[in-house]
Amino acid sequence: MIRAVAVCPHPPMIIPDIASGAVDDLTTLRSACDAAVSTILATDPERVVVLGAGEPGEDRDESAGGTFAPYGLELHAGGPGTGLPLSLTVGAWLLDRAGWAGPRTYSTGVPDVGGRVALLVMADGSAKRSTSAPGFFDDRAEAYDASIATALRDGDSVALASLDLDLGVELWAAGAPPLRTLGHMTKDADITASLRVDVAPFGVGYWVADWVLG
Image 1 (tube, rainbow, N blue to C red):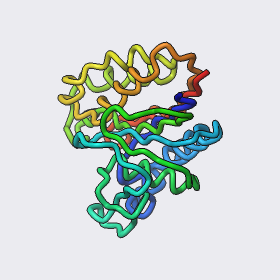
Image 2 (tube, one colour):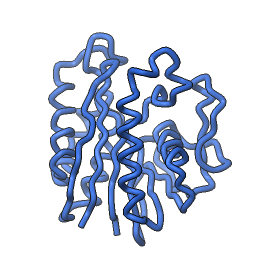
Image 3 (spheres, rainbow, N blue to C red):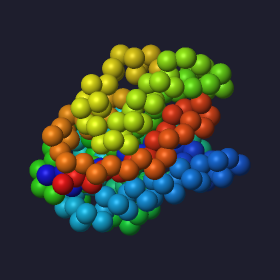
């Protein structure tokens, strides 16, 4: 049973030592992620499932880990392994930062959610929100991200389950697949939703939200 959901972005610059001179630009985002993670952990889950973008593969447990070495920082997150993709590595870092020492599942697909579970969904929006964005500018990007923000604010799992993944690929929205999975996993749930942040620094859409399920 899913008790609660947090949705957070996964830019490597959310790590203060990677952000360097831009660390203050993401302070609000980082604080909102901390608050959302605290909210889901307060529901007393038996396990936290971290869901994110990456190559399909088998779910991994708390022995898995990741590294920020490719981004110039010798920092490890999670368990002793180093094979987690960026999205799940940032999720592991957020859980480490929150002091979560319980069981974890890391997934890039549709995870098993048996028992009392909290979901941490790592999901970036489109990377084409401005001419300085990684993917340059696409005038469809803002509306695409806005539709996701509305769904997160309203607890609208049906809207998330209906996300256009092909358009997400065109807009470089890495979070579209895990958000769509979240929608399917929470259909028909009674959701109390909070959208904490909806921003696009550096031309990339980021949200922080948390849902508590009744």
